[in-house]
Length: 319
Image (cartoon, rainbow, N blue to C red; front, side):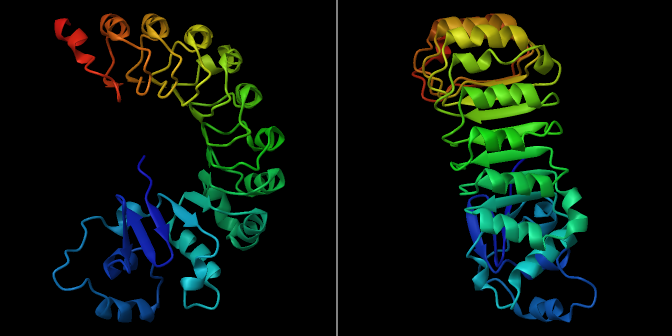
């Protein structure tokens, strides 16, 4: 799923920021009945001469993601811009909310002003570069009780206790990245508390082989996507348990797991026969011998990532 970012006065997509996007984007799903001001803006708001209107429409963006960014709403002319933002979320039918650069006070603001009747529609909650504490996370997850997808990136104030409180059994998708307190105990909590987990994306420098030993039969029936990125302490020994308890994985990333060698790749190829996507980028210890194992055993593989490899493709010429 490609995330599009919507923000007051701006729409960012495909790496660009468009100031005052074309009014046709907003009128289809932003304007309520009887809102004459939008009709007036439709007549006056146009792209500068010679600038082509982008092909993406707001209809394609709506429902993807709305971003709450503290200290940016003073750009609005409204006396109560936050209320307008929250009402617009409900009008557009957003099912995902991203809280960026926020603290506990901002969390309490969201909980206090967000339409209570619409909170149960939110399925995807993203926290990025936040200073929210354990208590703030608990409050936020208690408010958005229907969330099944949780992403936390750069949330360094959250401890193991806060993470445990965030792990509700309803979660099917979890992403943890650049959270300095995430370690082996965090993976233990994930394995214990999320019986329905289907996708886990983990980027944590302090996770070791011991963490992978926490996965067991409970995850084998549901977990299909596992991305372990820049887990520098993982070795082939950790993969030994992983491939036996999670034989049904279809997507596996070991990107940046720099201690993995050809022996680890051979374990993956021999045991994870359902893999369709495998990412071995930034794994400098893997050679052509590892690729040969992949070519021989992973017959349904559709995508293989080998970024920062040096001419490894000769191995495949004979297959």
